[in-house]
Length: 399
Image (tube, rainbow, N blue to C red; front, side):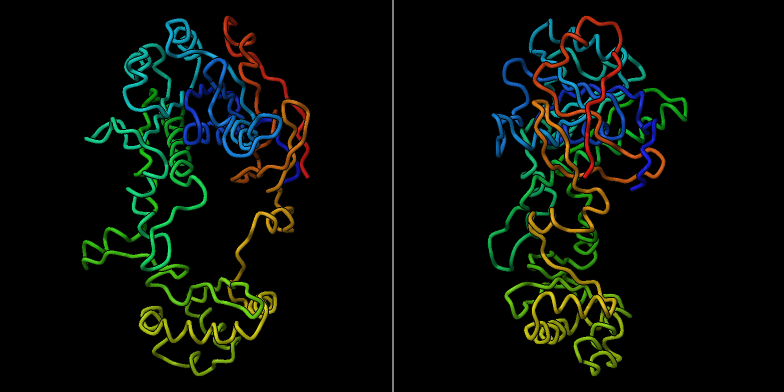
């Protein structure tokens, strides 16, 4: 990342009201806040966003909260009451974006549906994230990321052949929906500000965000009736790419599926016969003999430690790596060099390492301006004040 911090951030001046809870909506808000948007998070009085108590707590607060809510301000309002709804309307009169991830119909029941908000502020952009979208026969069903991952096709493909389908170890469906939502916000802002348009609704469904990542799943079924199944660490139809056991019990991830890469890989493992085999020159030929190729690669990796395998393949310019644990991540020089591990201060003055900011912009990079807020920390500054006051930066040290 460019070490010179820009004075102006890409989204400086954009005002966002975040009404959602837990992961999908707040992750979208975090993404916008990292690049300068002024994000006001509305939380239920007394308890706040449930994420404050999810997973591991330090000093009574989730350390996940410190990541998800950095660069945001907090207002405690009860959206079920007329007073809370009126306070939200007052904030939305000057907002650019509102984010919500409630079950469809909830905002309408509070008098905060799209028609009402658009009449209040025609420039407002509304990001709506839900399990199944705002329309369709499933729209009123409750949906979490795990269900979106299953309906989107991902769960069926995840795991070992013949074994129970497993979930990814993180809430991928929610995060993918948040990223699609943040992209939608940027497209809507461009339409409004560069094209002279008005605000609009961005309708993001968890299952559709996952489904959008499913590559050739549908055309393969349509053209050939093929139902892709679980394949463990291999990638069906692309060869060779797999996890190969090493002498010390580790696994080397090797992607030798490019035509020229395959030749270099075969030479590196001492299989010039396969390197010269014309039938293996392209991917379709290799897929037909993938078991033979995988066996040849693993016969070689089993004679070496993981580090030895990676050293040889690095020298041969063959893409290879290992399976990282979080301990590997926090000690890795590449992560450190690209500021993907940063230390930020929490609201109580402690410090904690958190993931850095992605993507990396050369002229207007994202940055940490202040820590995740205390519940209702900014009520006095925002409710009853005219306009959105300028925020105060809190120190954030990059390691």
